Each structure stands twice: as structure tokens, then as C-alpha cells.
Length: 314
Image (tube, rainbow, N blue to C red; front, side, top):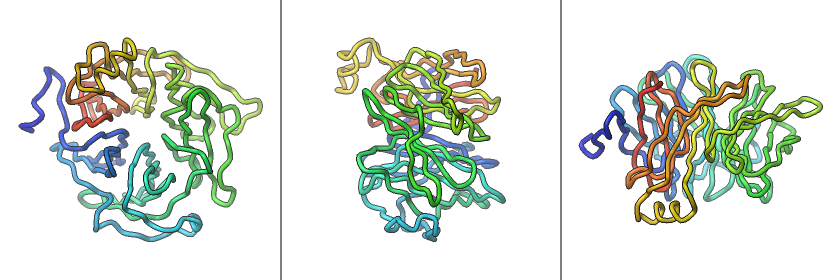
């Protein structure tokens, strides 16, 4: 706490390095974070005291491979660079966590999360390696046991869906500039995608003919997308005045003109309202995810950020 004094009304969670994505563990005081820096870690953060602990890779994680991931070669702890996260709620405090993983392999890693007593515990259940030439960014659980992930690419990237027994298929109508963050509707009929290259949030139909696609401009590069308790979406990302300002900020020469932002989006009407704008500084350069935690909005980031920023929820 002494290393993270408040910035006015803005508070911090100190410890996790480059916490690119955040998810809540249902009915618990815990938030999971993916730390992308260097080899990277999965963290558990206690919302009661804002302390954090490393969950993976450690010597204490379990391994119980699931037969539906039989093509995965096994758990690999080295070269673990976690990126996007998605948590599928389960029964009796047991949930499924999907993690975009770079480094030693490009894959979706699958863990069981046991949150019944104390800090969450992870058991590795398997992985699904990416199609050739595809680099994943974000992942979302789908009804059943499948999931989908974005291939962030410019000028054209796309979404991919994986189902047990069927493998990977490209999602129809999903090609555009820089698809980034990703969530899906509870019934699996809609994807909501961060349009990083288009400064927008995109709504894309799933399993419908013809494909339906709509979007709403938010005025910044959308990175991750998260559901809020009231059924709205939180789109988070970053913006800069020009490339020179961004280069100076990343080079440690001051961050004038660079900001992290969060917008609240109505998923039905596709209207957006900016609720967070935070100037980049030496401790926090680029926001990537906004998550509502109680009466706060937590903002995770990359580029060596050593904290999560906490804002009062509007």
C-alpha cells in the first residue's frame, strides 16, 4: 500500500504486472488477472484487502487432463504468456477458466477453478492449440463446452470458434480491422467484439443466416469487453493524440495526449457513454480492460503497469 498512494479519488491494487485482462470469480471476493509481462502469471486478487497471489505457474497447481482435449500434449509451465480470459460459471464453487496463451505454444489453456474454500485453486484440464498462422487475443466461453477467440490482425483479422469433436471453424462475417476483446451473450446468439482498428464496439450474430453486424463508435481503440452487473457492456481501451505522443509515452518521455478509457455500452440499443478517462503516467501507460467490482470500476493495463486502477463506479 505504501508503494501505491491514491491519485486523488483514484485508488490502486499494487502487485500484478501488466494485468491485461480481469474476470470475477462468481459468489466470491476474488478477481483473476492475466499478467502478460515476460513469461507471465495468472493472479488471484482478494477484493477485501487488495492483496494478490500467483496461481499459475506454481508448483502447487493440479493436473487432471480432460479427454475432450486429447490432442493437447500436456501442461507446459515455461514460456507462459497469458492474455485474454473467460470464466464459465459452474456448480458448487467449481468453474472453468479459459486462457489465451502465447509463448511456448499458441493455445487456449483450460483450467478448473476451485473457489469453495479460501483462495482459488487451479487444476489444468487441457489445451486447444491455435490453427496455423493464427494468434489469439481474447476468448469467450459458449453454451455447451465450446469457446470462441479473436485473431487480432490488421488490416484484417477474424473470429474462430472451437467445438468438441469439430475443432476450429472461422466465424462467418467476422473479418474486419483489428478484432480484439470478446464476450458472448448468455444464449450464445451474439458476439460483442472490441473493434480496436475501428474505434468501435461490434455486435455480430452467431449461427444466424444472413449474418447480422452492427457497431457503435466509442472514440478510442477498444481492447477488452466485459459484462457489467446491470446487463450493460464495459468497453475499455486507450487513445492518443498522435503516434509521436504514443512513442514518447512508451519510451518513458512523458505521456501528454495519451489516455486510458472505459465506455458503458447498451448491448440492445448500441449506445455508448464514456465513464472513465485516465491520463497515462509513469505507473500506468495503457488501459486494456474495465471490470465492475462492487461499487468500483477496475482498470487493468499493459506496457509494464505494476497496478490495477480503481475508480468509483458512476
